[in-house]
Structure formats: structure tokens, C-alpha cells
Image (cartoon, rainbow, N blue to C red; front, side, top):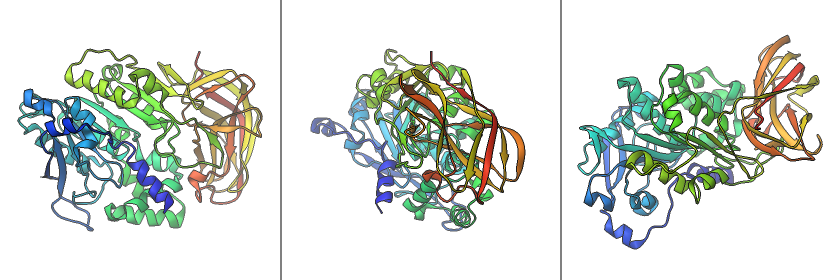
Length: 501
């Protein structure tokens, strides 16, 4: 129960809880609660018509002229905001706010299809149509409101679902700017990277909102528990539900996007935001966007292997003045209200280091290659080991990878990889807590493989060293290690590092 309570809190980390002055609340009209017709539900658990319910907050500024609107929605298992105090900072800044119960949650009907463009994406389009009908909303055309979006986790996913659903239908989106936090690019790669299930998170997310699940998700979860595999039905269910699908189909967002991602987030890690920044935006949009990584988000304790990260958001503080709230408001003001363009950092990655600093870079691809000795790790059972790569001082910011000739001596062998820092192999700890799996489904007598490592930002000090951690087990993937005891051998090993400077 404590885990579920903690996850519920995580799901609402992007909820907008800012104290409002009594005068500001009194000046604004009372919120209006309405429902619009959503896409009819096809799931046998809840077939038929679906209402998508909203709360509309009209700011006091609308009394003096038309204003832009921000859509807002909740995290997984949550519900929309209904009290002005919760969105007051946006109202005070002159934005209207429309907070949405996504299907399957709050007062909205249906079942959660988890960002499916045919369901949640179409629902968002219908919400935008409703916003365009409001006479106090600024518009660039008869049905085209000046529109932004905010929210985190599941409340970031709806932003991409709606924007890309419009692009797929009409070639453009009516959103003018997005500000998604701690959200995904690919749900399959987030929930089951390399088809190895993040057991701890998948189990917790399933437990948070059992009543919202479709029959497909119920059956897939049960199959995964019984078999230890990521079912084909789950791969198909989640396939279309994120920017990765649309980018693969050649669709791009041509609007400014402020991506705010937890680097030590062990559900939607930094890799997901990098994929969105690199592949889901046009070159023009990327030049008007920024990616800000911080140490936080969906963070569950990760003890095996042990990791480290100083909590905080130093890059937002450096870019925005007082932190992310101010950075977000300034970004929205510049891109929706025409405020003077005073923010710096557009077109770049701003990544908080595990030690608490901030590194701003123009690219996150590897720049340096190091050779390592042969590596032997057990599979299914055993302890982590750390192999030295280089001595500090050394700064990293981006996406490392490993290349090796891999041999496995068992069926469905799995091992987990990460970069770590310490003074020796005995005290090396994983940078920002994340590991990624490598899986060999069958007996392999020697095949060249490239293994993706978690994206990181770290300043390795003098006197410490950078290591590669290899482990047969990880508590984020509990029960989803190798299916049979075996061994994995890596020969002719090189690691590619995103070294800064």
C-alpha cells in the first residue's frame, strides 16, 4: 500500500498546486464544468458513448480582451483540476485553462487506451473544437484557438496524442506550443525495453487504476505475469501510442516544445525525452524548443545495483530564474502571448548532473571511444560487477553505448548495463540509478551487438573513475532476468561516451 500511495503522489507531480491570493480568485469568473462527446468506446468492458469532462477556467484578463488557452490534464490514476487555486499561476499570467479528465478517469467515461491516437488523440481534437467555440479565446482562425498545453506523465502523453492525431488527419496541429513533463516517446520501450519488463513499474501502474484498463490490457498483464515475457498483444496495444510511432511514419511537430524530463526517472528516463527532441520535432521547431533534464520524476528506490543522484532541478533555476514554474511561464508567454524573447537556451539540451550541477550542450551523441577487457557475467543469478573505463576529471552528458561480440550459453539470457562512478569497483554506484537490459533470446555463439546504455549527465571528479556496471539482476526488472541460469560473454568490447569538452 505504501508503494501505491507513493506512485499516486508521483502521478500528480506535475499537478498544479500553487497558493492563490484571495483577490485574484475573486476577480476571475467561477470555473465552468462541462462534458463533450468523446470517441465511442469499443472495448467490451464499457462499450457505447463516452463523455470527456472538463473544467474551464476563464481568467480575469479575459474581461479586457481575448486570451490564449492552456489545456491541462492529470497523471495516471488522477483526475482534472476543478479549483481555481490549482491553476492560479496560469490565470494570473493571463491564460485561460481547460483541465481534462482523460477517458477512463475522473468523470469521463470509457476505458484508458493510454494515448492511442484513435481514442485519446481524437478526444483531444474534440476538446480543442470546444475551446475554439468560446468567445473569450484568442484565435488565429474561426476554429483555431491560440493554444498551449501543460501537464506531466500521462498529462504529457495527451499533448503528443492530440497534436499528432491532428497532423495525421490534416497535416497540421492547432496547438501552438507544448510543455510536457516526464512523459514518453515509446511506451513499449519505456515499459519493456528490449522486451524485458520493468516489473516494478508495470505492476504498480496496473494496481493504481484497475478500473480504467481495457480488456486487452487486463489479459496482457496476466499473460506477462505467467510467462515472464512482454506479450505480443501488449506490443500491439502500445505500438501507436506515442511520438515514436508518428516519427517513424514521417510526422513531425513544427511548434515550440519545452521538454522537462527526470534523468533518474526509472519509468520514463532521459532517453525518452531525447528521442522526442531529436525525432519528433522539425529542425525549425527544435531551434525554438529546449530539453531540460533534472533529477526527479517517477523515481522508485533502486538498490540493486546501487545508484546515486542529487535531487533537484538546477538547470531550470539557471534558465528560468527561480525554477521550472517560472521557466514554463516565460516559455508559454513568449510562444503564445508574444512576450519579448528573453529566454536563452533554445535549441539545446540542459542536463542536471548526478552530482547537482548543470551542463548545457548542443548534441548528446557519443564523442569518445574507450576499449575494455573481455567481460563475463552470469545470467539469472549473481552480483553486479564494475569494469573501469577512465579516470576523472571527466564530464558526460548524453547517450552512451556499448559494442561487443556477444556469446551466450543459455536460452533467453538477459543482463543489465549502466555507467557508474566510484573510487574503485567496490564502491562504484550507477549514475542516476538507471540500467538498461540486453537480451539474447537463443543460444548465441558470437554475434556483434550494439547495446544502448542509459542516457546520463555526470561530472566525474579527480580521484574517482568511470566504470561500466554489468549485473545479472536489477530490482526495477525483478522476476524478469534470464529465464534459465547461464552466462553471457562480451569480447572485443568498446564503449562510446558523450564526453563534454
